[in-house]
Length: 150
Image 1 (tube, rainbow, N blue to C red):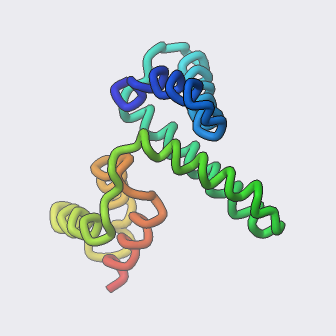
Image 2 (image 1 turned 135 degrees about the vertical axis):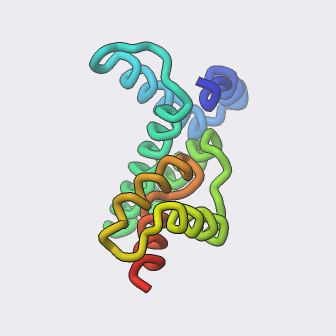
């Protein structure tokens, strides 16, 4: 669980600094981790890949909530959700730029000899594994569609 290895220390420092927003975000991460660890088979420790997927899901939930709050003219709640998403994203690997993602997708397309949208599943499968935690799934999918439709 290398990705989340300093979670407890971060929580302690947020408590000392009386940073309630950061503390709330970190507690949400810890709760999700504990729920995931005890769910189903109760297999214990999370792998780095599982932790990254969990963190991405938490960020996505916060961003979706913020969008809903913005639609309902609740900027105060939207700001809180966006700030929590930012705190959670600090535990994720550095996100790649769009150009870097395009390079990886081009390599995958050439490896798989993909030529049409019928091959999107193959390309997406490899891309999601290679870019796990480094890029947003929606961006990957739109870039793959763009490359395969031309």
